[in-house]
Structures are given as C-alpha cells and as structure tokens.
Length: 306
Image (cartoon, rainbow, N blue to C red; front, side):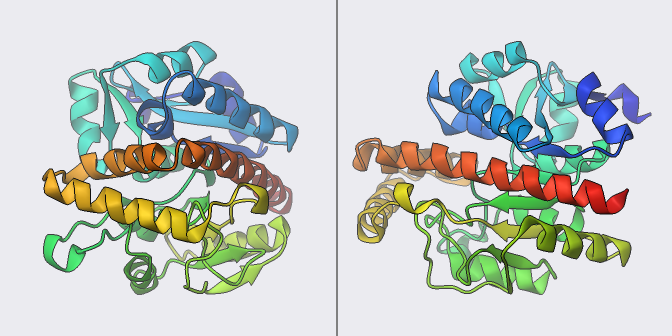
C-alpha cells in the first residue's frame, strides 16, 4: 500500500536495504528559505558534503502528489524555481497527495517521510518551535510533536531566535525528546552559538550520538533526538545585531497581521534585509556544517547496526 504513495530514489533504496548510511534533507529551505539560484546551489553542495563524509543524501519533497525520498538534480532545480510549491506540514500531506500538488517538506514532514523510507538521520538548518507569545496564540510548530513521536534524529543549529527558545526546550522536555549539544554545553540559536539555555547532554563525537540513538531505539523509546550543532565561529553573527534585527522584524510582522506558516519566511526575509544579506551567508554555512556532522553520525550508526 505504501508503494502507492512513496517513491524512493533507486540509489537511496539500495543504500537503505544494504544498511548503508543515508541522510535525509528537507526541501522547504529550497522552495521557501532562500532565493534562486542560491537555494539550488546550496542543495547541491549539501549533497556533495554528505557524500564526501561517507553517506548518501536523500532530499525529500512531494512532486505531483508523489512522496519522494531522494530527488534528481532536475527535481531540485524545479523546487528552487517553481512558484506553486506548498509548504507542507503533517496536516497538508493527504491533500497534497489527493490534489497531486507539489510540496516542500518542513522538518515535521521530512521526518515522517524519512521514517517511512527507513532513514534515521536528518540534517536541517534549524527546528521549528514555540513562537513568542504562544501563551496567547498557541502558535507551536508541528516539528515538536513530530520529534516526540517519530524515530528520526535531527541535526540542526538549534532553533531560530525568532522563537521562544526557553519554551521550545520546555516543550521538548515534557515530551521526552533529548536535546544534545554537539561540542557545546549551550543550545545554539541558529545564527549565534549562544542562546542562554543549556542542553540535556553534551557529546563530542558522532559515535557518542550514534550509540545513544541505538540505545534509545533498541529500548523502543519512541521519538527523535535534537542534536544542536553550533554554527562555525567564523560565520557566527553578532548577538546584538541579530537580536535587534529579529525584534524589528517581529514588530513589523505584528503590525502587518502576519500569522501562521507565513511568519517564519517573513521574519527570515526581513532579517536578511536588515543584516544586508549576512544572515543568508550564515544560514548556508550552518547547513553545510550540519550536513557534515549528520553524515558522520549516520555512518557511525550504520556501522554499529551491522
């Protein structure tokens, strides 16, 4: 029945069946996160980095209603240039399929489709979370519930500081999702290495993460794991600059009644404008760094599962 909806790229399928390392990649960053041609260039470079570190890349998206795990270069180009790609979360999947639409997967939907295909490691930029003011709006990303329920490890540069990071971490704790610092005791805040919030555990090697993941899933402790991998020092943005840019963007979003799934793309675009494009460069570099570490974790996990 699953084959009716899910199409796994032959190279990815072969790797999964052989127990070789595979890294899932989302597609919202291609369709909604960056301008063309930077988005396509970034996606191709991420795949190259994953291969260089011993794993197979599997970019995930929905093309003409078909759930795809592993895209061709032509499909990535299509996602990067097309204007009619839906930003697809869990609730959207049945309708994107039934209406045969094109969808770019968020963290939540990438986790769902990766899990269906048997991919356990996923690299992204940053996870969604609890939005500021959620005490009144209840604006909480579906990413967090997916992390609580779906057995996929997410390597990210933390959560964007447009979110309420403290409440995001509280939500993850309540749902039993381990939050790990890769080489850090502090949860990273996407553009900056510091957030003011600690992690549950610090790890200093990919093998430590892989061993913990194996133990978690061997014990049938459902759900994923957040591996916070800080942006490299040389690409980190000044904390005050990024904080001021975010505050300005949040105020403008409120004044323009921008809500729901439109909030994050609006805020990121505003921050990019305010920081004269520096935030985009930082975004790209942190994704590359996450892809590298994710490939190494996937390789170690594959080795200990053999």
